Length: 95
Image 1: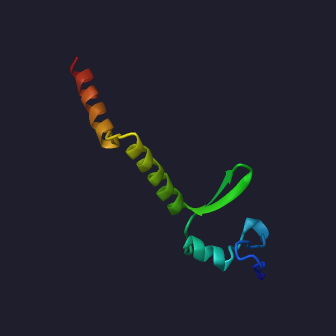
Image 2: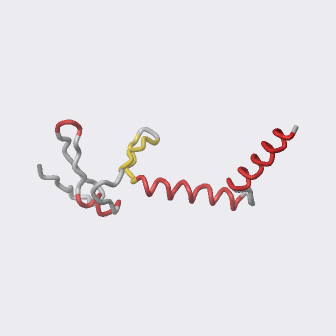
Image 3: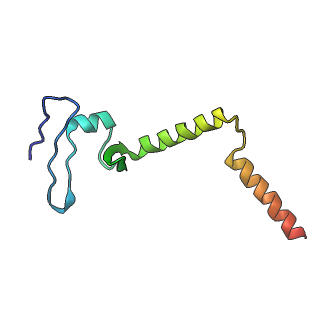
């Protein structure tokens, strides 16, 4: 199978093989910075499919929540929540 690139360098075409195997064109692999064994995500947004990596998705999610934290001046972290919950549990046990 030969993957070909159209005249628009932002449009790639790939062929689907038996059992659902899909070969990502080298341009996409380079842009996503993926290696053998990396996880690729296909996310449906507004009727279109977005291709990204698992690592990029985690990073974008972390950036999103960091931005929310900064915008809302939130200093409460998961560690704070766990500590608070443990204190509540100890209090419940002592009653």
